[in-house]
Length: 303
Ligand code: GLN
Image (cartoon, rainbow, N blue to C red; front, side):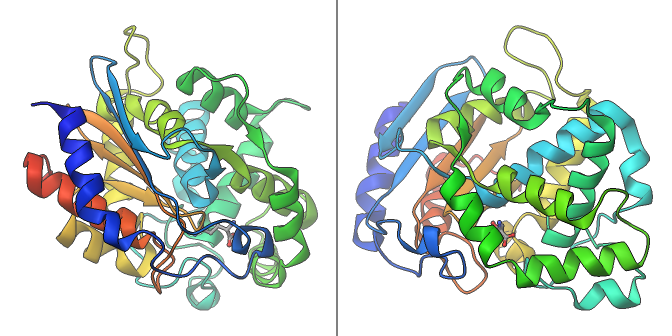
């Protein structure tokens, strides 16, 4: 298969959609991003990479960071995190706190904000002072030492944090945060504010397509753990649109309100697509369409 040609065909097919959807308005700095952008990258399991459009433009990874904080937690502390967070789909918005009250502070899964805040708290407890495990992982896997948070995005989110603060205080009231609420939120906003291109992210996620193993044969995760991360991406990566993504695309994936989506074809490749315009669930509209085109054209889906 000529992957570069496939990506170029997809780019043509989705071109009329460029700019559609709504940029994330609740984080003013993200609302200022030019919506007329589109990029897509594929990293094959043999390491070859392909890209089209704005595939080298850094964007805010937002909730895609949640995949990598979960990976780090599983790697450092095994299944311990599952005593604090569930792994069932929520059927609710990414920033919902409705279920937290009756689940007594145990979030439904690690990919909604409530769950990610607990994962961030857990990872903080496993890290040395001053250590930046997420940045180190992303830089190493993407092969790009320049990857960093955008401080303006982090500050913008911190300035408009009523919702995430409410979730964090509710978690804390149930005893499911071990660090001060302010510290957990600050780390969470920094993680979400990391800027990467689709090329960086497709490369950073490639171990998930290789059963947890890097191209050089060293492990990031065991095959069993990688299988589980992919399973949670499939069932919970898109909040109340997880089933819609499975229906249209049929791959494990994770979206972010910066407009990125990371998707994994186990055994074959890692894909990242970006377009800032979101649908009502907070998932990139053009990203969904491009991945729908990708799996329909290649036949590469888990179904
Ligand atoms: N930083 C965002 C928030 O907490 C992440 C949400 C997302 O990407 N879905 O609201």
